[in-house]
Amino acid sequence: MTNQATGPTNVTDIVVRPGNDADLAAINEIYNHYVLSTPVTFDVEPVSMPQRREWMRRYGPSGRHRLFVAEAGGAVIGYADSHQFRQKAAYDTTVETSAYCAPDAAGRGTGTALYRALFESIRGEDVRVAMAGITLPNAASVALHENFEFTLAGVMHDVGRKFGKYWDVAWFEKPLS
Image (cartoon, rainbow, N blue to C red; front, top):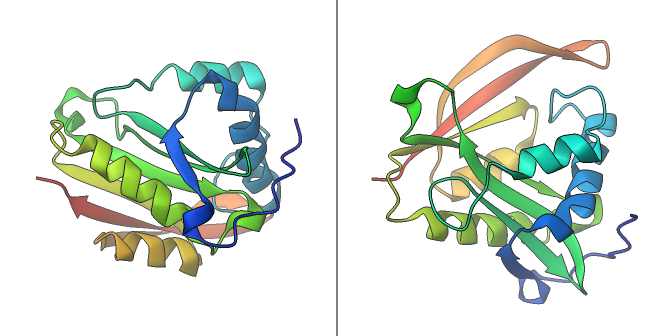
């Protein structure tokens, strides 16, 4: 499936809703753009549709692991999620968040609309901290997270190798309770 969205002109053109199985092809197309074209994800091979369907199983309509999509003109133009931070039980009250926008939807309020819905949906859940890892440099992602009151927790240097280069990752944290 090819996303034919031309991108909204502003945030009022965006509809944000919980993601579902019908969104998987568009989500995968957006994500795989970043896999193939940027260092913002350290996946180096595109995610297959069977892998994406398995990924979808971690989300539900309640609880701390949520998935939202943004639509404009009926096309999915971005998504954001909260998911398990680490597998050890002591981390259960911490989530990791992420947001990805179609290239033509970036810088138009899509990430902001998605994060607003995501954080509203997990309010009241048993979540104490949200974490976000950002490959540097990425001024747009840093600004989005700082706008949602994330603060820099630290930088891990040269931890990912992609496109023949080593990349730093900044970790940001946001207290939720």
